[in-house]
Amino acid sequence: RKEVEQDPGPFNVPEGATVAFNCTYSNSASQSFFWYRQDCRKEPKLLMSVYSSGNEDGRFTAQLNRASQYISLLIRDSKLSDSATYLCVVNNVGTYKYIFGTGTRLKVLA
Amino acid sequence: NAGVTQTPKFRILKIGQSMTLQCTQDMNHNYMYWYRQDPGMGLKLIYYSVGAGITDKGEVPNGYNVSRSTTEDFPLRLELAAPSQTSVYFCASSYDYGMRETQYFGPGTRLLVL
Image 1: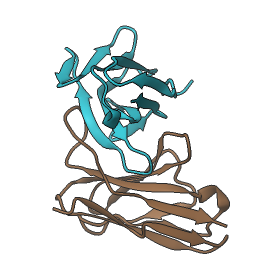
Image 2 (image 1 turned 120 degrees about the vertical axis):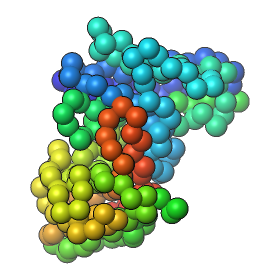
Image 3 (image 1 turned 180 degrees about the vertical axis):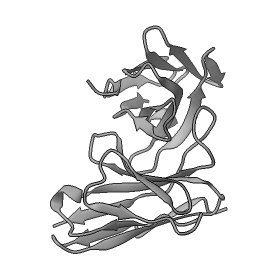
């Protein structure tokens, strides 16, 4: 089983729609969680960290469920510019390493 | 700040050739990382460094070497290139690690081994 798993998609949604992605992780020692965004042929960029209590940044909401070992990303009022691949990233206790999921591809359609 | 810079942007190598991928950051970050990303796959950690003079292997280190003689530079050396090393290589850095630490990535080097 992969340490971090994501549905590869693509998720095709119309502009203005709400879309949610989940990411599961297998190591209960995982302590830090992030969502990164990667545009085609570009480098990943941090979208947001995921805090235990959940957090929101504008149209984006991230949640952590430690009991079920998953994190989620909710995007409201999708824009064409949200089209990208969203990478789930975890960092485990006592390590300097970040584990990347394979990403979920989102296409927002006009 | 230029952030994380990588050179070259693109390179074609013949099987058996060697090359060095350059990575430099100007943010005085302690932690630096090399990843490779194959099509449709996640990033795989090749090597990382927690400070000048300290490096360690990641998930896929075979066929690569690194050094960290300064805080700013973290070159990745490919010896005896093989077609399996065709990939996009990203260098990243962070000040620390964990919850509130952002990894900053360079623009990547696309390598084709023929």
